[in-house]
Length: 475
Ligand code: 5AD
Ligand code: SF4
Image 1 (cartoon, helix red, strand yellow):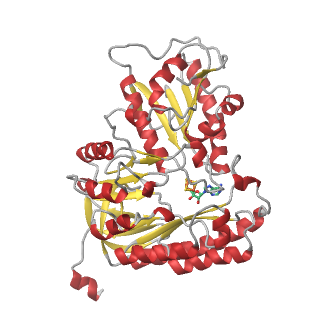
Image 2 (cartoon, protein in one colour; image 1 turned 180 degrees about the vertical axis):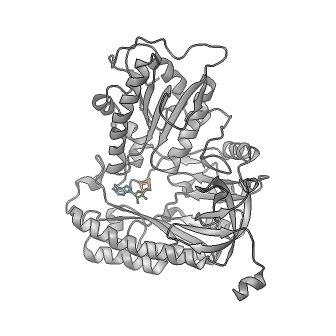
Image 3 (tube, protein in one colour; image 1 turned 120 degrees about the horizontal axis):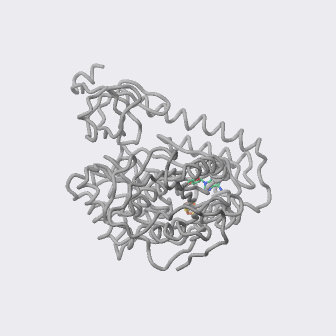
Protein backbone atom coordinates (compact mmCIF):
# COMPACT_ATOMS: atom_id res chain seq x y z
CA UNK A 1 0.00 0.00 0.00
CA UNK A 2 1.22 3.47 -0.70
CA UNK A 3 0.75 5.15 2.63
CA UNK A 4 3.44 7.50 3.75
CA UNK A 5 3.43 8.31 7.40
CA UNK A 6 4.71 11.68 8.47
CA UNK A 7 5.98 12.77 11.85
CA UNK A 8 3.44 13.91 14.44
CA UNK A 9 1.54 16.95 13.31
CA UNK A 10 -0.28 17.51 16.55
CA UNK A 11 -0.65 15.83 19.88
CA UNK A 12 -3.38 13.24 19.74
CA UNK A 13 -4.52 12.50 23.25
CA UNK A 14 -8.13 11.67 22.52
CA UNK A 15 -9.55 8.21 22.19
CA UNK A 16 -9.29 6.93 18.65
CA UNK A 17 -12.45 7.17 16.62
CA UNK A 18 -12.38 3.88 14.87
CA UNK A 19 -12.51 0.43 16.22
CA UNK A 20 -14.37 -2.80 15.74
CA UNK A 21 -17.56 -1.50 17.29
CA UNK A 22 -20.48 -3.81 16.62
CA UNK A 23 -22.90 -0.97 16.06
CA UNK A 24 -21.11 1.98 14.56
CA UNK A 25 -21.41 5.21 16.53
CA UNK A 26 -23.27 7.99 14.81
CA UNK A 27 -20.62 10.33 13.50
CA UNK A 28 -21.03 13.51 11.56
CA UNK A 29 -19.35 13.83 8.20
CA UNK A 30 -19.20 17.09 6.30
CA UNK A 31 -17.91 17.11 2.72
CA UNK A 32 -17.34 20.34 0.86
CA UNK A 33 -17.06 19.84 -2.89
CA UNK A 34 -15.26 22.14 -5.28
CA UNK A 35 -15.01 22.04 -9.06
CA UNK A 36 -16.49 19.63 -11.55
CA UNK A 37 -19.34 17.13 -11.49
CA UNK A 38 -16.91 14.25 -11.11
CA UNK A 39 -15.94 15.69 -7.75
CA UNK A 40 -19.64 15.73 -6.82
CA UNK A 41 -19.84 12.05 -7.76
CA UNK A 42 -16.63 11.26 -5.85
CA UNK A 43 -17.91 13.04 -2.73
CA UNK A 44 -21.04 10.89 -2.82
CA UNK A 45 -18.94 7.75 -3.11
CA UNK A 46 -16.70 8.85 -0.20
CA UNK A 47 -19.88 9.09 1.88
CA UNK A 48 -20.80 5.56 0.72
CA UNK A 49 -17.38 4.23 1.80
CA UNK A 50 -17.64 5.92 5.20
CA UNK A 51 -21.27 4.98 5.95
CA UNK A 52 -20.38 1.49 7.30
CA UNK A 53 -18.06 3.20 9.79
CA UNK A 54 -21.04 5.11 11.16
CA UNK A 55 -20.50 8.42 9.36
CA UNK A 56 -23.65 10.20 8.26
CA UNK A 57 -23.64 13.31 6.08
CA UNK A 58 -24.18 16.63 7.83
CA UNK A 59 -24.87 19.92 6.12
CA UNK A 60 -22.42 22.05 8.14
CA UNK A 61 -18.88 21.52 9.46
CA UNK A 62 -19.71 22.66 13.01
CA UNK A 63 -19.34 19.78 15.41
CA UNK A 64 -18.43 17.37 12.61
CA UNK A 65 -16.26 14.33 13.40
CA UNK A 66 -14.77 14.45 9.94
CA UNK A 67 -14.51 17.21 7.36
CA UNK A 68 -13.36 16.46 3.83
CA UNK A 69 -12.55 19.18 1.33
CA UNK A 70 -12.85 17.60 -2.10
CA UNK A 71 -10.79 20.03 -4.10
CA UNK A 72 -10.21 21.32 -7.63
CA UNK A 73 -6.88 22.29 -9.17
CA UNK A 74 -8.02 23.36 -12.62
CA UNK A 75 -7.37 27.07 -12.16
CA UNK A 76 -5.33 28.95 -9.59
CA UNK A 77 -8.38 30.53 -7.96
CA UNK A 78 -9.99 27.16 -7.35
CA UNK A 79 -6.86 25.83 -5.64
CA UNK A 80 -6.33 28.90 -3.46
CA UNK A 81 -9.86 28.68 -2.04
CA UNK A 82 -8.83 25.47 -0.29
CA UNK A 83 -6.21 27.15 1.87
CA UNK A 84 -8.55 29.89 3.04
CA UNK A 85 -11.18 27.28 3.90
CA UNK A 86 -8.58 25.27 5.82
CA UNK A 87 -7.78 28.36 7.89
CA UNK A 88 -11.45 28.62 8.91
CA UNK A 89 -11.74 24.91 9.66
CA UNK A 90 -8.65 25.00 11.85
CA UNK A 91 -10.63 27.10 14.34
CA UNK A 92 -13.59 24.69 14.33
CA UNK A 93 -11.22 21.79 14.82
CA UNK A 94 -9.62 23.58 17.78
CA UNK A 95 -13.02 24.29 19.32
CA UNK A 96 -14.05 20.66 18.88
CA UNK A 97 -10.91 19.50 20.64
CA UNK A 98 -11.50 21.91 23.52
CA UNK A 99 -14.91 20.26 23.96
CA UNK A 100 -13.16 16.92 24.29
CA UNK A 101 -14.06 15.79 20.74
CA UNK A 102 -12.01 15.24 17.64
CA UNK A 103 -12.39 16.43 14.08
CA UNK A 104 -10.50 14.59 11.36
CA UNK A 105 -9.66 17.12 8.68
CA UNK A 106 -8.99 15.78 5.19
CA UNK A 107 -8.02 17.27 1.85
CA UNK A 108 -9.08 15.14 -1.11
CA UNK A 109 -9.32 15.58 -4.87
CA UNK A 110 -7.04 17.24 -7.38
CA UNK A 111 -5.28 19.78 -5.12
CA UNK A 112 -4.41 16.88 -2.82
CA UNK A 113 -3.07 14.91 -5.79
CA UNK A 114 -1.06 17.82 -7.18
CA UNK A 115 0.29 19.31 -3.96
CA UNK A 116 0.33 16.32 -1.61
CA UNK A 117 3.00 16.88 0.98
CA UNK A 118 2.98 20.66 0.37
CA UNK A 119 -0.50 20.82 1.97
CA UNK A 120 0.84 19.26 5.15
CA UNK A 121 3.61 21.84 5.21
CA UNK A 122 1.25 24.77 4.71
CA UNK A 123 -1.49 23.37 6.96
CA UNK A 124 0.11 20.92 9.43
CA UNK A 125 -3.19 20.48 11.29
CA UNK A 126 -4.59 18.50 8.32
CA UNK A 127 -4.94 14.78 9.14
CA UNK A 128 -5.40 13.13 5.75
CA UNK A 129 -4.45 14.02 2.19
CA UNK A 130 -5.60 11.70 -0.59
CA UNK A 131 -6.12 11.89 -4.32
CA UNK A 132 -9.07 11.00 -6.58
CA UNK A 133 -7.93 7.39 -7.14
CA UNK A 134 -7.52 6.19 -3.56
CA UNK A 135 -10.64 7.10 -1.62
CA UNK A 136 -11.78 3.46 -1.57
CA UNK A 137 -8.99 3.09 1.02
CA UNK A 138 -10.66 5.60 3.36
CA UNK A 139 -11.47 3.11 6.14
CA UNK A 140 -7.78 2.24 6.43
CA UNK A 141 -6.77 5.90 6.25
CA UNK A 142 -9.26 6.80 8.99
CA UNK A 143 -7.90 4.03 11.20
CA UNK A 144 -4.38 5.35 10.69
CA UNK A 145 -5.35 8.97 11.23
CA UNK A 146 -7.14 8.01 14.43
CA UNK A 147 -4.03 6.45 15.90
CA UNK A 148 -1.39 8.76 17.26
CA UNK A 149 1.50 9.32 14.91
CA UNK A 150 0.89 11.83 12.20
CA UNK A 151 -0.92 12.62 9.04
CA UNK A 152 -1.82 10.17 6.29
CA UNK A 153 -0.82 10.89 2.72
CA UNK A 154 -2.08 8.70 -0.11
CA UNK A 155 -1.67 10.11 -3.58
CA UNK A 156 -0.93 6.84 -5.37
CA UNK A 157 -2.29 5.81 -8.71
CA UNK A 158 -2.99 2.27 -7.50
CA UNK A 159 -3.04 -0.74 -9.81
CA UNK A 160 -6.43 -1.75 -8.50
CA UNK A 161 -9.37 0.34 -9.64
CA UNK A 162 -11.28 2.11 -6.90
CA UNK A 163 -14.49 1.11 -8.71
CA UNK A 164 -13.84 -2.54 -7.84
CA UNK A 165 -13.70 -1.65 -4.16
CA UNK A 166 -16.53 0.82 -3.72
CA UNK A 167 -19.65 -0.38 -1.92
CA UNK A 168 -22.67 -1.41 -3.99
CA UNK A 169 -24.84 0.57 -1.63
CA UNK A 170 -25.39 4.12 -2.89
CA UNK A 171 -26.69 6.67 -0.45
CA UNK A 172 -29.13 9.41 -1.18
CA UNK A 173 -27.39 12.76 -1.01
CA UNK A 174 -28.64 16.24 -1.86
CA UNK A 175 -26.93 15.87 -5.25
CA UNK A 176 -28.21 12.38 -5.82
CA UNK A 177 -32.01 12.44 -5.74
CA UNK A 178 -34.14 12.49 -8.87
CA UNK A 179 -31.01 13.22 -10.89
CA UNK A 180 -27.62 11.63 -10.29
CA UNK A 181 -24.11 11.44 -11.71
CA UNK A 182 -22.43 8.20 -12.69
CA UNK A 183 -18.71 8.09 -13.53
CA UNK A 184 -18.06 5.76 -16.47
CA UNK A 185 -14.64 6.98 -17.60
CA UNK A 186 -11.90 8.73 -15.76
CA UNK A 187 -8.53 10.26 -16.48
CA UNK A 188 -7.18 11.88 -19.60
CA UNK A 189 -4.48 11.09 -22.16
CA UNK A 190 -5.04 14.19 -24.29
CA UNK A 191 -2.57 16.52 -22.61
CA UNK A 192 -4.03 19.82 -23.70
CA UNK A 193 -1.09 22.08 -22.93
CA UNK A 194 -2.95 24.23 -20.34
CA UNK A 195 -4.55 21.43 -18.35
CA UNK A 196 -3.64 19.70 -15.07
CA UNK A 197 -6.18 16.90 -15.36
CA UNK A 198 -3.88 14.28 -16.97
CA UNK A 199 -1.55 14.77 -13.99
CA UNK A 200 -4.19 14.79 -11.24
CA UNK A 201 -6.67 12.17 -12.51
CA UNK A 202 -4.19 9.87 -14.22
CA UNK A 203 -4.49 8.08 -17.54
CA UNK A 204 -7.74 7.19 -19.29
CA UNK A 205 -9.73 4.33 -17.86
CA UNK A 206 -13.23 3.08 -18.73
CA UNK A 207 -15.40 1.01 -16.39
CA UNK A 208 -16.90 -2.24 -17.66
CA UNK A 209 -20.32 -1.77 -19.24
CA UNK A 210 -21.90 -4.37 -16.93
CA UNK A 211 -20.69 -2.47 -13.83
CA UNK A 212 -22.01 0.79 -15.14
CA UNK A 213 -25.39 -0.75 -15.97
CA UNK A 214 -25.55 -2.32 -12.50
CA UNK A 215 -24.97 1.04 -10.86
CA UNK A 216 -27.50 2.69 -13.18
CA UNK A 217 -30.12 0.06 -12.28
CA UNK A 218 -29.51 0.58 -8.58
CA UNK A 219 -29.91 4.34 -9.02
CA UNK A 220 -33.11 3.91 -11.05
CA UNK A 221 -34.39 1.49 -8.40
CA UNK A 222 -33.81 4.20 -5.77
CA UNK A 223 -35.95 6.66 -7.71
CA UNK A 224 -33.37 8.38 -9.91
CA UNK A 225 -35.01 9.50 -13.16
CA UNK A 226 -32.05 11.17 -14.85
CA UNK A 227 -28.43 10.05 -15.01
CA UNK A 228 -25.51 12.07 -16.28
CA UNK A 229 -22.66 9.82 -17.36
CA UNK A 230 -19.37 11.38 -16.38
CA UNK A 231 -15.86 11.23 -17.75
CA UNK A 232 -13.05 13.66 -18.51
CA UNK A 233 -13.33 12.35 -22.08
CA UNK A 234 -16.62 10.58 -21.67
CA UNK A 235 -17.18 10.22 -25.41
CA UNK A 236 -13.99 8.15 -25.61
CA UNK A 237 -15.62 5.61 -23.26
CA UNK A 238 -14.63 2.14 -24.41
CA UNK A 239 -15.81 -1.05 -22.76
CA UNK A 240 -14.64 -4.18 -24.63
CA UNK A 241 -15.52 -3.28 -28.22
CA UNK A 242 -18.38 -0.96 -27.34
CA UNK A 243 -18.36 2.79 -27.07
CA UNK A 244 -20.58 5.37 -25.42
CA UNK A 245 -23.37 5.16 -28.01
CA UNK A 246 -23.84 1.45 -27.23
CA UNK A 247 -23.78 2.10 -23.48
CA UNK A 248 -26.46 4.79 -23.82
CA UNK A 249 -28.64 2.41 -25.86
CA UNK A 250 -28.44 -0.15 -23.00
CA UNK A 251 -29.11 2.49 -20.36
CA UNK A 252 -32.21 3.63 -22.21
CA UNK A 253 -33.73 0.16 -21.63
CA UNK A 254 -33.59 0.55 -17.84
CA UNK A 255 -37.04 0.72 -16.30
CA UNK A 256 -37.75 4.06 -14.62
CA UNK A 257 -34.74 5.83 -16.10
CA UNK A 258 -36.18 8.52 -18.34
CA UNK A 259 -33.28 10.80 -19.10
CA UNK A 260 -29.64 10.31 -20.01
CA UNK A 261 -26.88 12.88 -20.45
CA UNK A 262 -23.12 12.66 -20.73
CA UNK A 263 -20.30 15.09 -20.07
CA UNK A 264 -17.56 16.18 -20.87
CA UNK A 265 -16.81 15.41 -24.49
CA UNK A 266 -13.70 15.92 -26.58
CA UNK A 267 -14.71 17.17 -30.03
CA UNK A 268 -12.19 15.02 -31.96
CA UNK A 269 -13.63 11.87 -30.32
CA UNK A 270 -17.30 12.40 -31.34
CA UNK A 271 -17.95 9.28 -33.44
CA UNK A 272 -20.85 8.51 -35.78
CA UNK A 273 -22.41 5.98 -33.37
CA UNK A 274 -22.70 8.60 -30.68
CA UNK A 275 -24.08 11.19 -33.08
CA UNK A 276 -26.63 8.59 -34.25
CA UNK A 277 -27.60 7.99 -30.60
CA UNK A 278 -28.79 11.61 -30.51
CA UNK A 279 -31.06 10.81 -33.45
CA UNK A 280 -32.30 7.41 -32.27
CA UNK A 281 -32.56 7.47 -28.49
CA UNK A 282 -35.30 9.74 -27.13
CA UNK A 283 -34.03 9.33 -23.55
CA UNK A 284 -30.79 11.06 -24.57
CA UNK A 285 -31.41 14.74 -23.81
CA UNK A 286 -30.98 17.26 -26.65
CA UNK A 287 -28.20 19.13 -24.91
CA UNK A 288 -24.46 18.63 -25.29
CA UNK A 289 -21.52 20.24 -23.51
CA UNK A 290 -18.77 20.26 -26.10
CA UNK A 291 -15.81 22.45 -25.11
CA UNK A 292 -14.17 24.25 -28.04
CA UNK A 293 -11.73 26.43 -26.00
CA UNK A 294 -10.85 28.76 -28.90
CA UNK A 295 -11.90 29.66 -32.44
CA UNK A 296 -8.34 30.22 -33.68
CA UNK A 297 -6.65 27.29 -35.41
CA UNK A 298 -3.24 28.61 -34.40
CA UNK A 299 -4.21 28.69 -30.72
CA UNK A 300 -6.04 25.35 -30.92
CA UNK A 301 -2.80 23.86 -32.25
CA UNK A 302 -0.76 25.41 -29.44
CA UNK A 303 -3.34 24.01 -27.02
CA UNK A 304 -2.86 20.53 -28.59
CA UNK A 305 -6.60 20.20 -29.11
CA UNK A 306 -6.57 18.05 -32.26
CA UNK A 307 -9.39 19.96 -33.91
CA UNK A 308 -9.76 23.13 -35.93
CA UNK A 309 -12.53 25.70 -35.79
CA UNK A 310 -13.80 24.25 -39.08
CA UNK A 311 -13.90 20.72 -37.60
CA UNK A 312 -15.98 22.05 -34.72
CA UNK A 313 -18.45 23.81 -37.03
CA UNK A 314 -18.84 20.66 -39.15
CA UNK A 315 -19.43 18.63 -35.99
CA UNK A 316 -22.10 21.09 -34.82
CA UNK A 317 -23.81 20.71 -38.22
CA UNK A 318 -23.69 16.91 -37.99
CA UNK A 319 -25.20 16.96 -34.52
CA UNK A 320 -27.96 19.30 -35.66
CA UNK A 321 -28.64 17.09 -38.66
CA UNK A 322 -29.07 14.16 -36.25
CA UNK A 323 -31.22 16.09 -33.79
CA UNK A 324 -32.42 19.47 -35.03
CA UNK A 325 -33.36 20.76 -31.55
CA UNK A 326 -29.99 20.00 -29.92
CA UNK A 327 -28.55 22.81 -27.77
CA UNK A 328 -24.78 23.18 -27.59
CA UNK A 329 -22.81 24.39 -24.62
CA UNK A 330 -19.07 25.00 -24.44
CA UNK A 331 -15.96 26.03 -22.53
CA UNK A 332 -13.63 28.82 -23.63
CA UNK A 333 -10.21 29.98 -22.51
CA UNK A 334 -9.17 33.54 -23.34
CA UNK A 335 -5.63 34.88 -23.12
CA UNK A 336 -3.83 31.62 -23.88
CA UNK A 337 -0.11 32.42 -24.43
CA UNK A 338 0.41 34.08 -27.80
CA UNK A 339 -3.30 34.86 -28.34
CA UNK A 340 -3.50 37.98 -30.52
CA UNK A 341 -6.47 40.26 -31.22
CA UNK A 342 -6.96 38.34 -34.48
CA UNK A 343 -7.03 34.99 -32.62
CA UNK A 344 -9.57 36.36 -30.19
CA UNK A 345 -11.66 37.73 -33.08
CA UNK A 346 -11.71 34.18 -34.50
CA UNK A 347 -13.17 32.96 -31.19
CA UNK A 348 -15.87 35.64 -31.33
CA UNK A 349 -16.61 34.62 -34.93
CA UNK A 350 -17.01 30.97 -33.93
CA UNK A 351 -19.44 32.01 -31.19
CA UNK A 352 -21.53 33.87 -33.79
CA UNK A 353 -21.44 30.90 -36.15
CA UNK A 354 -22.40 28.21 -33.62
CA UNK A 355 -24.85 30.05 -31.31
CA UNK A 356 -24.52 28.41 -27.95
CA UNK A 357 -27.39 27.95 -25.52
CA UNK A 358 -25.03 28.20 -22.56
CA UNK A 359 -21.26 28.38 -21.96
CA UNK A 360 -18.44 28.77 -19.47
CA UNK A 361 -15.44 30.97 -20.14
CA UNK A 362 -12.22 31.51 -18.25
CA UNK A 363 -9.06 33.56 -18.30
CA UNK A 364 -6.06 31.35 -19.00
CA UNK A 365 -4.52 30.38 -15.67
CA UNK A 366 -0.93 29.10 -15.84
CA UNK A 367 -0.84 25.82 -13.94
CA UNK A 368 2.45 24.57 -12.52
CA UNK A 369 3.85 21.62 -14.48
CA UNK A 370 1.85 22.24 -17.67
CA UNK A 371 3.62 23.25 -20.93
CA UNK A 372 1.51 26.39 -21.42
CA UNK A 373 2.57 27.80 -18.05
CA UNK A 374 6.09 28.37 -19.37
CA UNK A 375 5.25 29.35 -22.96
CA UNK A 376 6.51 32.66 -24.30
CA UNK A 377 4.11 35.57 -24.89
CA UNK A 378 1.97 35.26 -21.79
CA UNK A 379 -0.96 37.63 -22.19
CA UNK A 380 -1.23 40.49 -19.66
CA UNK A 381 -4.09 40.16 -17.19
CA UNK A 382 -5.71 43.43 -18.32
CA UNK A 383 -6.03 42.03 -21.86
CA UNK A 384 -7.42 38.74 -20.59
CA UNK A 385 -9.97 40.63 -18.54
CA UNK A 386 -11.09 42.73 -21.48
CA UNK A 387 -11.43 39.71 -23.78
CA UNK A 388 -13.29 37.72 -21.14
CA UNK A 389 -15.79 40.54 -20.65
CA UNK A 390 -16.40 40.85 -24.41
CA UNK A 391 -16.80 37.09 -24.82
CA UNK A 392 -19.10 36.74 -21.82
CA UNK A 393 -21.26 39.58 -23.11
CA UNK A 394 -21.88 37.68 -26.33
CA UNK A 395 -22.34 34.31 -24.64
CA UNK A 396 -24.77 35.79 -22.11
CA UNK A 397 -26.73 37.41 -24.92
CA UNK A 398 -26.96 34.09 -26.76
CA UNK A 399 -28.08 32.32 -23.59
CA UNK A 400 -30.76 34.94 -22.91
CA UNK A 401 -31.96 34.77 -26.52
CA UNK A 402 -32.27 30.99 -26.20
CA UNK A 403 -34.06 31.28 -22.86
CA UNK A 404 -36.48 33.80 -24.40
CA UNK A 405 -37.17 31.46 -27.30
CA UNK A 406 -38.48 28.97 -24.72
CA UNK A 407 -41.27 31.27 -23.46
CA UNK A 408 -44.68 29.93 -24.44
CA UNK A 409 -43.32 26.45 -25.05
CA UNK A 410 -44.25 23.36 -23.07
CA UNK A 411 -41.20 21.74 -21.54
CA UNK A 412 -40.84 18.50 -19.63
CA UNK A 413 -39.10 19.52 -16.42
CA UNK A 414 -37.63 17.15 -13.85
CA UNK A 415 -38.56 18.79 -10.54
CA UNK A 416 -35.70 17.84 -8.26
CA UNK A 417 -35.36 20.48 -5.53
CA UNK A 418 -37.26 22.97 -3.40
CA UNK A 419 -37.26 26.63 -4.30
CA UNK A 420 -36.45 29.52 -2.02
CA UNK A 421 -40.10 30.45 -1.59
CA UNK A 422 -42.68 28.20 0.07
CA UNK A 423 -44.66 26.16 -2.41
CA UNK A 424 -42.01 26.58 -5.07
CA UNK A 425 -40.15 23.75 -6.75
CA UNK A 426 -37.16 23.99 -9.06
CA UNK A 427 -36.32 21.62 -11.85
CA UNK A 428 -34.18 21.09 -14.89
CA UNK A 429 -35.37 21.42 -18.45
CA UNK A 430 -34.05 19.15 -21.22
CA UNK A 431 -31.46 21.91 -21.81
CA UNK A 432 -30.37 22.03 -18.15
CA UNK A 433 -32.03 25.38 -17.58
CA UNK A 434 -33.26 25.84 -14.00
CA UNK A 435 -37.05 26.22 -14.07
CA UNK A 436 -38.97 27.69 -11.11
CA UNK A 437 -42.61 26.79 -10.64
CA UNK A 438 -45.30 27.01 -7.96
CA UNK A 439 -46.21 23.38 -7.50
CA UNK A 440 -47.28 21.01 -4.70
CA UNK A 441 -44.63 18.88 -2.98
CA UNK A 442 -46.10 15.74 -4.52
CA UNK A 443 -44.60 16.84 -7.85
CA UNK A 444 -41.09 16.57 -6.39
CA UNK A 445 -39.06 13.98 -8.24
CA UNK A 446 -41.41 13.83 -11.21
CA UNK A 447 -41.04 14.94 -14.80
CA UNK A 448 -43.78 17.50 -15.24
CA UNK A 449 -44.94 19.36 -18.35
CA UNK A 450 -44.70 23.10 -17.70
CA UNK A 451 -45.65 26.10 -19.78
CA UNK A 452 -42.67 28.45 -19.79
CA UNK A 453 -43.91 31.89 -18.76
CA UNK A 454 -40.73 33.98 -18.38
CA UNK A 455 -37.06 33.91 -19.28
CA UNK A 456 -34.20 35.24 -17.16
CA UNK A 457 -30.43 35.34 -17.66
CA UNK A 458 -29.84 31.99 -15.94
CA UNK A 459 -33.26 30.45 -15.44
CA UNK A 460 -36.87 30.16 -16.56
CA UNK A 461 -40.22 30.46 -14.82
CA UNK A 462 -42.93 27.94 -15.57
CA UNK A 463 -46.56 27.26 -14.90
CA UNK A 464 -48.33 23.95 -14.24
CA UNK A 465 -51.24 24.79 -16.52
CA UNK A 466 -50.05 23.43 -19.80
CA UNK A 467 -51.64 25.26 -22.70
CA UNK A 468 -53.17 23.29 -25.55
CA UNK A 469 -51.39 23.58 -28.86
CA UNK A 470 -54.27 25.79 -30.08
CA UNK A 471 -53.82 28.20 -27.18
CA UNK A 472 -50.07 28.24 -27.76
CA UNK A 473 -50.55 29.01 -31.43
CA UNK A 474 -52.76 32.00 -30.63
CA UNK A 475 -50.49 33.24 -27.81
N1 5AD B 1 -6.77 28.02 -17.40
C1 5AD B 1 -8.04 28.40 -17.66
N2 5AD B 1 -9.04 27.53 -17.89
C2 5AD B 1 -8.75 26.22 -17.88
N3 5AD B 1 -9.50 25.13 -18.10
C3 5AD B 1 -8.73 24.04 -17.95
N4 5AD B 1 -7.46 24.40 -17.65
C4 5AD B 1 -7.44 25.76 -17.61
C5 5AD B 1 -6.43 26.72 -17.37
N5 5AD B 1 -5.18 26.36 -17.10
C6 5AD B 1 -10.92 25.20 -18.47
C7 5AD B 1 -11.16 24.57 -19.84
C8 5AD B 1 -11.84 23.28 -19.49
C9 5AD B 1 -12.61 23.66 -18.23
C10 5AD B 1 -13.04 22.55 -17.37
O1 5AD B 1 -11.68 24.48 -17.53
O2 5AD B 1 -12.02 25.42 -20.56
O3 5AD B 1 -12.71 22.81 -20.50
FE1 SF4 C 1 -7.84 18.70 -19.76
FE2 SF4 C 1 -7.78 18.53 -22.43
FE3 SF4 C 1 -8.00 16.29 -20.94
FE4 SF4 C 1 -10.06 18.02 -21.10
S1 SF4 C 1 -9.17 16.86 -22.82
S2 SF4 C 1 -9.25 17.05 -19.23
S3 SF4 C 1 -9.02 19.99 -21.20
S4 SF4 C 1 -6.24 17.67 -21.00
